[in-house]
Length: 579
Image (cartoon, rainbow, N blue to C red; front, side):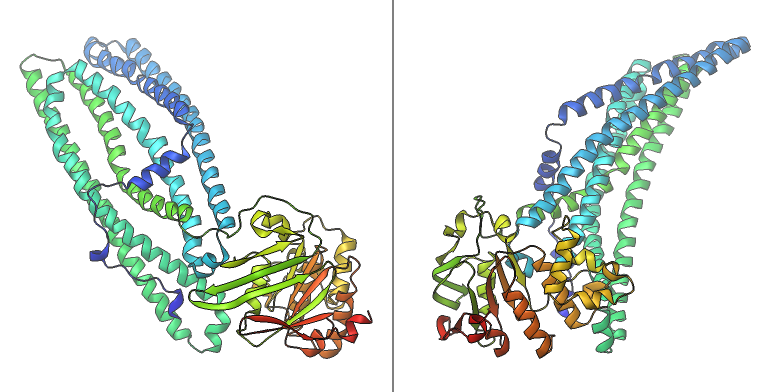
């Protein structure tokens, strides 16, 4: 049960950095916006121009307080009010257009990121995927890519316009009264210190929370997938205790992170509020001395308030940027870590089912499983490989389908070395029936036609007949549209076996590999099934891996795998010869 649990990282073990943003995260973000900087520059310029619309509004406000109100001119007041409303409506239209513009850039970057993540999964080796924490990998691809989206929206849609607007507003304030601006600059050093110092604490709390969230996600997925195991082991109480522990940890770390956000927000608002009070006091003193008018102070105060809103926008976005930084680091790991598939060839071949192994040796670490294997199988031949558990039969299958690569020796498909072959095209001409066929949640038809979406009804029925699956499917109320549950749990072992065989046969493979294909079938069914498979119309090459002598007897050549060596075991059987 310990295999699915996330190792805890105490706070003291988390890496402390002076920089709030990691270089790998910054590079990854820039990578997905490469080629977009010109468009973002246009967006920034238009955002700056849009912010200039505040200038006529400020001018109109000053006219209201310095002329319209003192003179009692209601008509001028109404004209100025209508002008302010009109400019605000124009500003709203420009803002909506800018939003649509930048969303296109962001969603295109998101599309490229998710495409690259899925492409990366496709080229990772089976060995890496077998040892990887799949639940954690799923969480990072799905949740952290969504956080990249949130980060992009916050930074480009909100903080970038806020920064540009702030520059414009500061320029306006300098023109109105540079002395008041100089006074408020005193607040800037503690504001920068606050962002940096509290930012480090937020970064640490975000890291801890995301670890707790991954653990919670992983525990929940385990409970959903292993419900039968939990009940059969009668450990529901233990499982619920683990879930409560994850929830408690998530609750604690979530509150800690939220309070870090709250502390940052309140401290920042207090400092900017202090700047507002300083403006009011100093501006009031200048009015009393006749150095500025009430209208000047009001437009300065309004512009300062707008600037405060933009600064608040920038500061409040810092926690989200730090959360995005952590997600970018994890996405960087997904995109750059891990062992790739062993073969990277590009030659697409017309595979006829013939293959050979020449002096092939394979080891797991220091343990040699196969030693100098030589085997040549011609097109249409039927062979069987027998051997004790652990002899290396599964390893031999993994070598044939290109899941792993021998440390010594070479494999050939139709005379072409595996190193040169495009493995995807080769596998499309192979059919592998595993001991426990992979079945996913969905309908029988979904599983049957996976990878073969354009299969005709004629080919589907032919595959079902050969796999002896036609009768049990026709007996189901919904036939091919029957839902079979997670892992095919609503089917019997024999039904899952036959469905797996039918799915493989639908591809008309040139090479058919049967790994203990009859585990869940009775003797009579085995005989009918094997006669049908060995007499398939396209006459594929057949490799049988089995302990069952009745199944092995259908092979033309039988090989025994023992102590890493492959040697002929028996003469060709009569069953195969009589077909």
